[in-house]
Length: 348
Ligand SMILES: NC(=O)c1ccc[n+]([C@@H]2O[C@H](COP(=O)([O-])OP(=O)(O)OC[C@H]3O[C@@H](n4cnc5c(N)ncnc54)[C@H](O)[C@@H]3O)[C@@H](O)[C@H]2O)c1
Image (cartoon, rainbow, N blue to C red; front, side, top):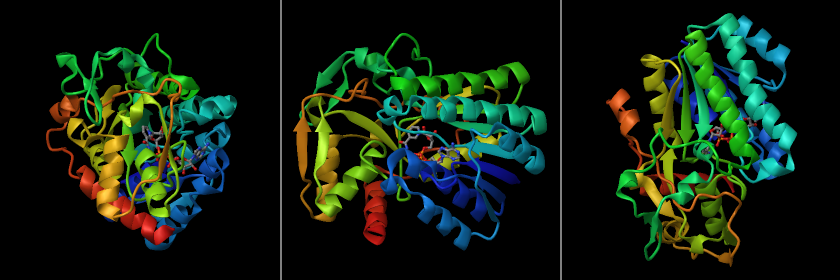
């Protein structure tokens, strides 16, 4: 297959590139290092682009901004890929308010450019879109919670296995990022249902892995571990540091994308996360990082939580496992932490 991957120098994009390249597919990657514009030099992804270009024979890099409508239409028409994996985005909840136009132009309009290009040039090709659990806004915070020693957890048994795809996306606070991602998510579903294109939205929890260029505003575990290794202060924003996230290794993300491309469905939505087993609070993440690096975590605590931040979120994986029973989580938290530590040790 020829697979077009947008955001190919980012965390998920690069993992997808390597994964499919190792299986003999031809990969066209699209990335313009916009992450360095969004987050400054610390978010620079050129190192990852160069790694892909120097190590993979069947990889072509295209320097293109997905906001460039004519460029996107022309590229799709030229390449006519067998599958599209769309991971390019302005990915930060907090950053969006400072750059609202860039955020919406990238996340909503950029996605629309790609969908329309696919409809015109290769409507039979599966289109996998990286969405986010922020499409649910802060509505998960309305679920009854219980406070435990090191974490918050759901007190309502209806959520014992986490949040499912049926959860409301409406009438809650999303952040501008969440709103631009809702627009993209609905458009991806619509191009599926209306035009019968095999599309899906993967509503990610915390996606992580050794190739993340984690920064304070995006990439929780990667950034937390970097702070631990550099003995730099990590700031906790509210919720007593007991806020819970489910983490999924980017390899398990790539494996699910492969399962979907091999047996695509139309206009689907999946909550893609590590599930309850791979959920961890900030305090628990400090403890695990300390145990694995032998270094104490230096941190400070600010009372104010980030606007709209989830207190407790983990994904219900039932639908993913029902539709794709051969897929499961293969990397637990300890393995994922160890890989991120090893990667930062080489890169820092
Ligand atoms: N990492 C997470 O925890 C997480 C969680 C939920 C959802 N997601 C979603 O998954 C996707 C991938 O996230 P990631 O963590 O790999 O992000 P990332 O920032 O590491 O990668 C995104 C890549 O897209 C590129 N890019 C951004 N704007 C572009 C543009 N206009 N044109 C071309 N390239 C552009 C960036 O340079 C970057 O390399 C995003 O849609 C994000 O919203 C991520």
